[in-house]
Length: 251
Image (cartoon, rainbow, N blue to C red; front, side):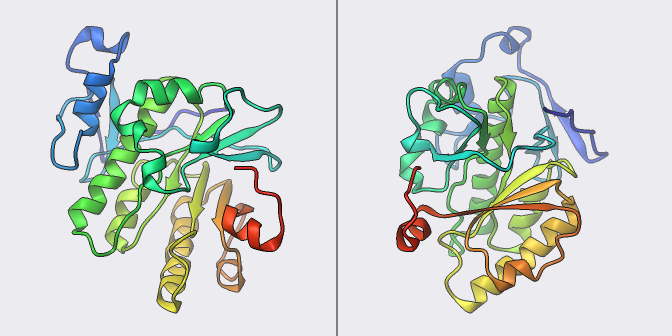
């Protein structure tokens, strides 16, 4: 079940460049808008998009709830035909394994249409990169996710950050009370990174009050100690965590 997102005062409507774009959106149009590189993209959208905040992050309608029992499948390992039951396609893997969604979003979206849910793409945010590069990665991810929704997919917004400014951008355009996903896989090693993740997670829960939060990676005393309120936590180990704990890895 999906719910339309209320439009905040800070939102802007980006109207398609021409009247015919809504009925037929092509890869060329999408890659121009999303950007063939972090420095080369167009300002118009090939379909009507509502954006939020100073970085014009596309708004996602999201979903209101999801079953707690589901198959979590990596994008690169997804089967050609969807298995029975609820399925969630995720991008918690190396960037090169899903880079095709930026260069060929139409084909990528076609391959996802048979699955129940899909998270928004999760490109790596390098702390060593300039802030504008991290913000651009967040924007491109959300732009692709908005196209997923335009094509009728049910999207679970994935929130990734390294700094407060990253989190400002990642939280823009996310509907309060909806389902969201967060992963600490690969960024939960040092004491500092664990502390920062806990602080960000606390802010996410306070600001968005999600109905459910899919936590991927590690769930320990730090993540359990934040105030979850009425948010239902759905936890899944990473594939590496499953391997070392003896759990059969499915995707």
